[in-house]
Length: 372
Image (cartoon, rainbow, N blue to C red; front, side):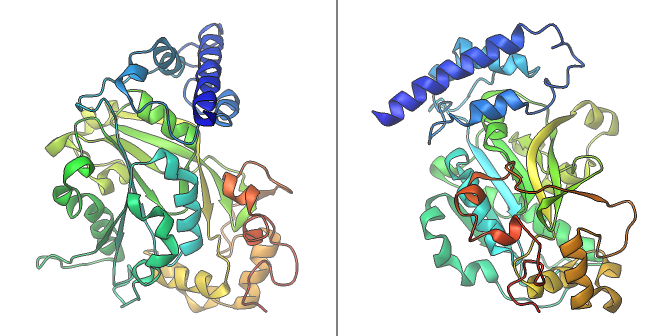
């Protein structure tokens, strides 16, 4: 009964929001609210039921769905699956960031059908590394029913010339090495949503509601609020241009690396397929609980210069993190300090003490549990 009441309240809120948006004179093609997740969407998101409403053909045929999509400049999606549903696959890269993986799974579990994780036994530099996700599998037991795990297979023809080759192989493997093996309900059908992300690029649940409900361009950038070290420091420049979303189209599906890099395909047609949805996600770069994780991440970067010894000094790292300065001294990266930030994944508000390092980097330790 509680779930039904929540669903009815959400439907009423959705209809009210959609009608309000459609009635605004500024909602032309250039309206900022049309191409972004607005504050009204976020208010609506507070009433999202535990399981999304748009899992049946009845919802897609409703006036509420049509009005909601039109308010964002899209048409409502028409499912082709006999079940009347549209699935969402979350393909994300992870190294040792298990806290971030748990935050991601907790935030998106009710809104994603399958999480696809491909783990590599090598860093992007080609060095051996432990299989952290595999070895910590039991930690994520409550999410196992939606998790698809695969250990990266290196093709015989793989001959890396640069660190990016390892990264590209692993990212594409989330599609190339996993999707052909999926069966039953897990098998993709035309129009299913595919997200391509790093583990610390987390779409808002409101964004996933829009993606499941509406038809959107093949190459959609989900621009992220860009934080550094924690949600205490907001990047002062443009939003982070990731993650990306596309749809499953069989052999015509945009592969993950091409989707993320904005390349592949026919240039003219490729550009016609591109669009951007602002304020659609959170990205927290270099947001680690331990100094050891920070140093391990530096060692795994595709950007080799970022792992030079001069940047690995623990005191310098802690000072930069505490003060919100770029560890690598890049002048183009400056940050606005935000105290008691509330624009964070809901799990951080619920479990603030556990994730204190993601909310406050003050003090001698700079939030690291293994420093000084």
